[in-house]
Amino acid sequence: MTARKGKPRQDIVFKPYLKGHAVSLPAAKRGLRILAYQIAFAFLFLLIGPLFNFESLVLRLLINLAMVTSLMVLLYIEGTRAGVEDVSFAQIALQRQQNGKTIDVRELNRCYHPAKGFVTALLGTLPLLLISLLFALTVQPRQYVLGSLPDWVAAYERRADIGLALSYYHEQRSLTLPDLLGIAVRLFILPFINMVSQNDTRALCLVDRLSPLLILLPPCAYGTGYLRGPVLRARVHGAIESDNRRRQRRRKATKSAEE
Image 1: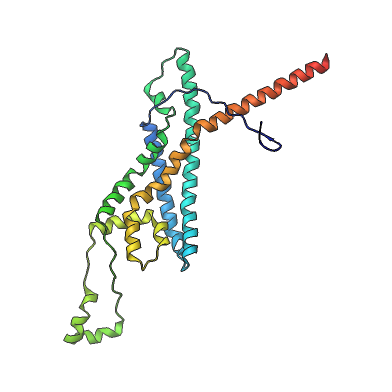
Image 2: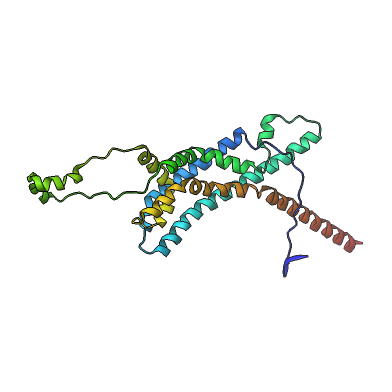
């Protein structure tokens, strides 16, 4: 059979493996790597994000979606790599167990488990998720902030009738808990903030309230990539077996020719 005309289908050979633990110390360590990626990309978005804050809605959507997609692709690749590594170790661990050797907890923690990728992503994103949940529950629609007064107005502020009207400009507003949380959370959802018009307070508030889901979106790509581990490992086994069959056919052909 062929997958495409002229191209043979790649063999896929699934081999059994020892199922490990979904929650483990190696998963937590990998979670820190996911968190590091998110922090690095957040600061990258902060540096280059203003360059992509176009007036055109279509351009803003395309560019900022591309920025989010780049992070998701990176985490997806990391997930597939980790999945293949864990399946490989789990297959070796199963062979050792079948040979009568004892597999300890540390080895089981390194073995593949289908849910480990999503657990790893959740552990790595947990600090950001908790902050965003607290922020989403306390956020309110943004209010208009008065700008600064020009210097020449200061002379008129001495008059009681004008000074009272301009007193709003000198009110000091202290930072609240939602303000502090918002600074942290919006740093990680900046591409989504850029997709919305800064004058649309309702849309901005909606993005803030959806921040827990938006923060979880890129790490989910890691878990999805991790699920590909068994298939990618099966393709490796299939390629090895296909190569062995080709070698056997060549040996038989050579032997027949010699006879």
